[in-house]
Image (cartoon, rainbow, N blue to C red; front, side, top):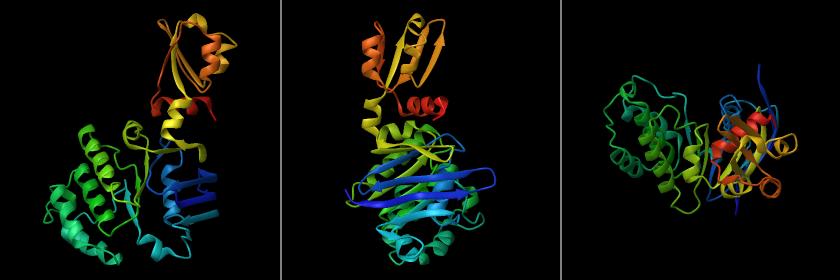
Length: 285
């Protein structure tokens, strides 16, 4: 698969946080989930990729081109949805569209109006009167109405109820039906990515911890349950994290075979993305 975004040795120093030689790449035709707890570096990474923060080191290549040297051409192919409000509150949707559309040489009014109708939005309505879910749908309509090839989204489902989050996941799947499309989707709500992600990149404290396909990650780890007497100095080393109660233990491991060899009478289940993410955070990698 073609590489559409490549980040190499990216550094960004803020007052109380820094990105530490961040390396990853995105493949065409994939939904890539960018996960981590709040404050782990997701938004800083995305803003640095987009040039909203100047980088302090490293390189960023989008569609095979240095983004700093080819900013206009590259950004014409990007759709961006940020969690922060970046609309003028007192404008109507139609007025806001009129501000944004001229920035893109491939703006397609027909596509935009189709999405407005599909999302049941009213162009006469003021931005200030939109719910969080309606704002997000409007932002997505703007982001993909210029034939964007890569959709970059920062925490788009934060603060939304499960029904609206499910709607947005379906919108992303519909977007991906066209050849050559890709999504880079940051979130701390990992249940959304259990449903739709192809690849997962996990960042913690400004460092990339995991970068692999979702299925490989889930296959490589296991959720193990059993009686607490099975946990001792040796077997505890097989786990990334363990939680013990009066009813038994529950742990996440990336050493499934060794667990099966050394521990009898345990139940091994497929973990969730959240199980794995929290295990690595607790482990302090």
